[in-house]
Length: 347
Ligand SMILES: NC(=O)c1ccc[n+]([C@@H]2O[C@H](COP(=O)([O-])OP(=O)(O)OC[C@H]3O[C@@H](n4cnc5c(N)ncnc54)[C@H](OP(=O)(O)O)[C@@H]3O)[C@@H](O)[C@H]2O)c1
Image (cartoon, rainbow, N blue to C red; front, side):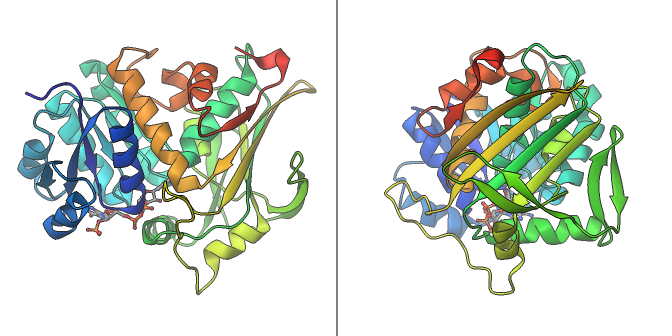
């Protein structure tokens, strides 16, 4: 068996996986480097001498079982998650270890809740999909903004990205999600996901200084529409994206992020401005930081750390806001996230 400090990272050599591996090492964990391509795993070891590599394929359950042997938890960073999530959750359940992924794909996250909720709960297992910038952070912020409210009329999550240089994995996830929707759009309204063909609205969102008001695409629907309603009674969940970043993402010549600092972060900055409304009252929480891929690593690793140290509220397939103390979780990321939480919603 492992030391309890071994954490498997599936998709370890991907852009996000590399940030996760580095974050685990910084916190004293021993990452097990998992992926489908042994040559890419060995190339990664050149940056992390001494770490163990384990080649495994989602088509081969036995290879996944071998790869997870001795691991205390697994973080799945290999997307599209429409392909990888279910086999990895199955393997984690067989191994009896927690599973965390960084899926931004709405339908894949819905599937994880739908297919594994009962089994994970019965097994007392913790499975956290979308434990990442999209899905996880928004849910932690909405949960924090709700404070003592148990329900709200609306939750708005506005993403103020300075730019968006997407990875190959992001673009592949977008293609898969688009295919699963037959090219339709999706929004969360009336307490459910609604597929439609309406044009996306453009509006101005009043981001706080220094960003200030920005043109955003409304109904730029992200994974928060799965994570937030999974545990909060909010029938309208809307997400917005700065128009410039949305244009970067869909540009035919979209280029991958390039590192500008020693941590490997790009120059991209973000503000996530969350507003919840109930009966005419409003509560707002804002977070800001650098590089949406890099911030995903402390989010996923903090989640694993809390699960492994018993700082969880429930079991089953759960979103971040449901299973963790959201304000405390966000405060723990102060080295990576600047938070503005008004006095009336502080936990
Ligand atoms: N929710 C969020 O905020 C958030 C944040 C970061 C990332 N993500 C998601 O995480 C995924 C990875 O993103 P990334 O930025 O790391 O992209 P990336 O650099 O392109 O890496 C993708 C990784 O997935 C692996 N992979 C793809 N299909 C696989 C399969 N069938 N079996 C095994 N491995 C497979 C790739 O391995 P090969 O090189 O062998 O193909 C590679 O290691 C994307 O889906 C992205 O949307 C979400």
